[in-house]
Amino acid sequence: MACTSASVIFIDGSESQYLQQRTDAPELQLGRESLSSIMSALTGFLPPYNADQATISELVTPSPLRKPRAFVALSVAGLTKEDVTAAFSGRHMEETKIDGCPQEVQSAAVSAVAQANPDVHVISIDQQALQGCENNCIEEHLASAASTFDGEHAIGESPALVFSSGKQLLLSQIANKLFAIELASVWGGIKEQVKKQQEIRSSGHAQEQDIQQDVQVYEIVLLGLQALATTHEEGCEEMQAAQNAVRHMLARAVKQIDEAFDGDVVYQVVICDEGVAQVQAGKSFTTKACAYGGFILLLYFSMAAVWCMCNMPMQVDTLLFGSKKAE
Image (cartoon, rainbow, N blue to C red; front, side):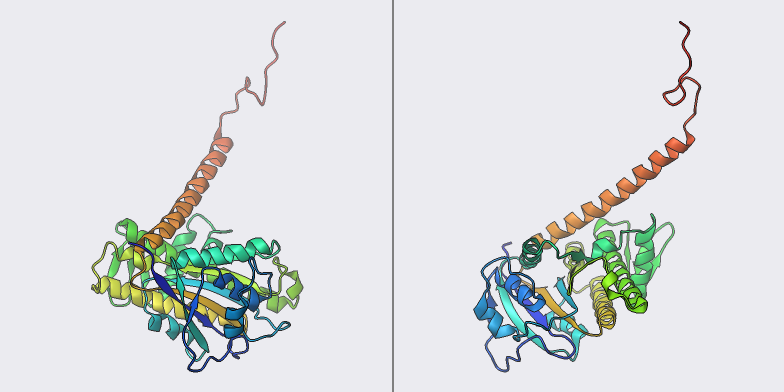
């Protein structure tokens, strides 16, 4: 199935100071390179291409010295526009359309801006959950993520993600497990970044941040619902429970990020329409699954190597303790 188009919604900061108020204006149709131009204009970074000045003037309020503290590129599949925008209730929003595969265009825009600005560090939220954690970090993050929608991570002979409705997804099935891993990694990454910002604020030394830039740039990808739909019937109770879980977790995530930055956050949200191919979601989801699998394997072999070195027999005639040879 070919990619068609997607909705792109720009969500202003809590004080509505960065986006134009386009009352009764026609919906904008963005080109593939427009996202990077708008992102550059909102953050103050150098644009990777010739800036789309016409689109920028339509959407962005001219303010060369005033920039948000954080910019979030969010990609969501499997939820309606109403489901996603409900997490940003009360904020000014501007909806546009963009041609092409949505996640591909979003990732390309973020990468292009990062390449044009070598000092800019784009933080992939789900990868942050795997840094500095023990070998059971996914299980810990999954239990925490489940609490955002009153669910739980049931362990035992048949591990499962249990929703508040009582429905569950058995983690022995690949699609279910990957969906659960995505929830765990995204929520875990958000908690890590929020904690970091709180520590910076409490220390009173914002200049000690590891990332020396005015605007923090985050990328969040939630494609698990679309992959989950390949193994579950549309409208079934399990799918409804999973969609409800993602809605609740997204609302909690937005609240956490806003609190960390005092609401001074602009969101660039790509929502996959129903006509958009599930192939793109599958590719991105497979890439993430390979990354998680590779991390677990690397951790396992590293621990095995350390164990072997600590327990290897130290004989007299070894490379470490060579014996004297008779002449």
